[in-house]
Image (cartoon, rainbow, N blue to C red):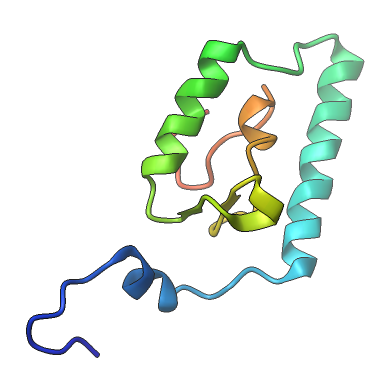
Length: 100
């Protein structure tokens, strides 16, 4: 509930979002590993350039779903549960299509 004079904040919005369960985070991570293994088997690149990784991180840091202190300081997306590690992987993309 928003009272008079109260501005909506990121945390107000996120309080309404369901939290990802550990099971869902593990499922998402397992799928990412499978995509990496498939890419490696095909001989595709596994990592993006440092410039692309930095671009992705900046996008995430501006997103309402990004929690900078999540996952032991690695940051965490509240939509998919990923960390900064995902931003470096060529096989991965943002769950709400902000980057790929």
